[in-house]
Length: 382
Image (cartoon, rainbow, N blue to C red; front, side, top):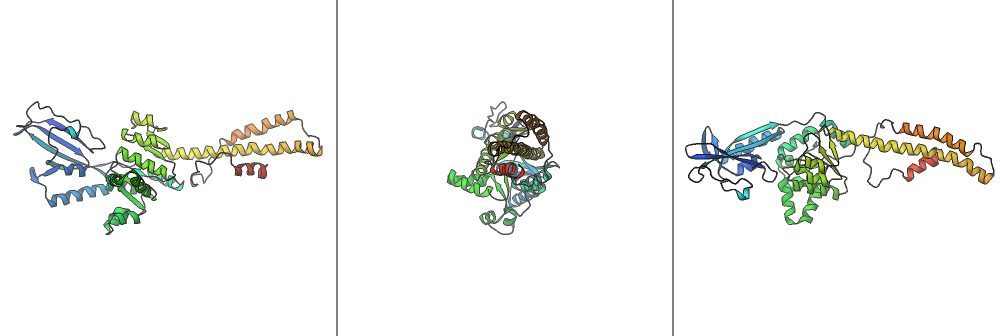
C-alpha cells in the first residue's frame, strides 16, 4: 500500500523465509503513527515489550530530530506466522479497512531523519513578501516540531509560538490565545470541526488572523478548509503546491500556483500559474512585476489624459471668446501622434519605483482609472 496523506504510512509485505514465517510485513511513515501500531521494540538484536522508558526515549529523539528541522520517518515490521499465513496467501493491501492480516503489535525498528533544507533564496523572498504586506502561511504534512523549525529558519516564524508557551507552563488553549505565532496540528482542525462546520470555520478563521501561522500534519481536505478560512476573512489567497493532495486547495485559491518540475499533472491542470523553476522566490518576482505593470499603465494613462486639457482649452476659447484656433484640427492630430504615442510607449518600459515592494497590496475593488488619477491628470498636470 503506497503512502497516502490519510493513513500517513506505506506498507509492504515481503516474502522472507524464516523459522516460523514465510512473509514479513513492513511499515514506514509518520513516527507517531507507526509507534501506535507497535507493542514491541527491536533492542540489541532482540524483541522486547515497549515500556515507559522506551516511550520517553522515542518522544525525546523524535522531538530532537524535529527541532533540528529534519524530516523524520518511523519504521516497523511484523513476521507473519506460517500457520495462518501460508505460502501463496492472498494478501489484501488496498486499504486498512480491508487488511486480512494484523496491523497491531508490530516491532518498532527505529527512526531515520532526513535533511531537506529550504532553498537559499527563500528567506529573502519571505522577507520581501512580508514587507509588501503579503502574509505567508506554511501548510505542510511534516510533524509540528519539524514544521516550526523550518518556519523559523526561513523567517515565517520570528516570535514565540504556542508550543514555546506550553513549555513555559501555559495550557494548550491559553497558549493558543496568547501567542502571536501558532503551530497547528491537523488533529486540532479535525477536533475544531467536530461540533459542526460553522463552529469549526469560526475557530479556523480566528487562527488564520494570527500574524504568523504554521499548519502541520494536514490532510488535503484541511488544506482546502484553511484556504476557505483565509478567503472568509477577506484575504486574496495564492496557494502553492506540487502534489495531487494540493490540487483541491490550489483550485479553491484566488490564484493557484503549481511547481513545473516536481508538480503532478493534476496539480498543473488545477493551477492558474506554473513555476518553471520550482522556486518560491519566483512568485515574489511575479508580484513585483505585476505591481510595476499596474504602475506603468497608470503613468501612461495620466500622460495621455494630460494632453487632453491643452487641446480642449483653445477650442473652448474659440467657442466662448471667439479667439481663433492657432492650429487646425489636422495639425493638432499630427502633433498628438508624435507627442502622445511614442512617449507613452516608453513609459510602459519604466523601471519599478524603489518602494514598490513596501506598499500594502491594493484592494480587489481598486480600479486602474480612479478619481485621484483623473484629478492628477486634468486638475494638476493638465
